[in-house]
Image (tube, rainbow, N blue to C red; front, top):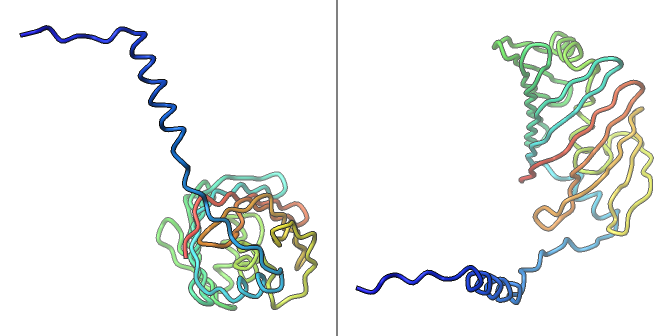
Length: 204
């Protein structure tokens, strides 16, 4: 039986270089970018969107207090289900909002509704989140129920910033999701409150 021949280091290097050249010659699969549509059309389509899900990281600063948390948002028609996990006082919180209805479930299993839920949420976050408008802002459009000031559209007909209901929303980046542009980096500001969001995943 002949001994197994071992390649010399130089031969190994040549083989690796050849493989790299072959791979570099393979055409990359192009990423299909969303078509550029007029802003009026994009805005109406996104405002009419009834279902979406997102997972994100948020950093909240409210006055002298602040925290980081994970956020999961599920939108189903007019109902918003939001889960925040992180150092929110004691553990996380689950929020369900639909119109004027609001309820929360704490990490201890305590369930609160209406004014009690609102007070608990403010105590944990340091401010009252505008949940009814947030469902639109996270999509990169204003709440159609209130007047808004839209600022500077980029070449892809996407908002760069927005002012509504005393809040300023800045869009620092978008990602292509299912043939459309959706926000990836968002900053919400009002008075001494600043919320930064980085969306890790979108799904419909």
